[in-house]
Image (cartoon, rainbow over all chains, first blue to last red; front, top):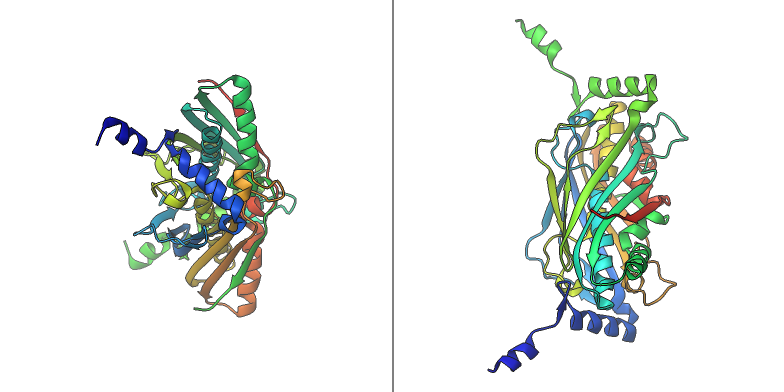
Length: 194
Length: 194
């Protein structure tokens, strides 16, 4: 095998993403929109107090049940002592920030790659305020959720400042978690008996 | 020390929560609403492709900076192969389900405890649909986020079915993450230079 053949067989990577695979995925979805339909899932079990644990493994997408994960991911929610826990894990509203940070970042990286922009460094800092009077039911005029979430992004990439600003606005508009937070998304809860 | 003295010193626990501490917290907030103001935070750093990592440690609440966590929590977002990753971690939209499951559960347990209801078992299964045409920017009429999230809760507790139904509705209305998903919450992103 010559060096040239080896080079041809290496998929082209930009920002750690296989560019050909990304465009193949987009072409496949353009030809059959049903491939874009995904269903994600989590199972959670209460342990005690503010401690509970999720397992995440299977999902449906691209026309079939995914079987790529041999072992489930496990994550533990907990609470700090000031919220009656023992720091068994980060708490749910902190995990929401982790999800949001990751989604904005991945959406940014994906669309940078599609535009041929190489990112050198990308980090974010998030903060959001919650008034616990809402959770506790002490004041009905107080929303229990985040009032606002701010993301400060530090990014350096091989493009102009204007292109970075455009890319950031695009990522914000197209990030699934950011969109789920910014927009009202119905949550339906029903009791079942096992 | 007599057996009676020992019993008096044991805090009363319901559902793994210290009931006296819970009511003390509520009384303190009723006396000074500023104690209910919390700010949660996360820091995230992009690794490569769809992999990025958050650290979560400090927060502000109950009138001061919390210092109860000696070590930061770390969580890794990843993507499965069908989404161009290597299953480096659960993905951001799955972490959102973990956060939502945990928050509804903890809110349910907290208010059950306040009502003196003992929970024997509580588990949830979540699922939500996303059409990736939104993320990919292929169809502007498709929202990038979850279309809807369904939670199936299996709970047994020492109370009537009607009380359980009322408690579940109350938990749904007062859960911070559920409220952040159901309601439009502003996300502000700005670029900073470090």
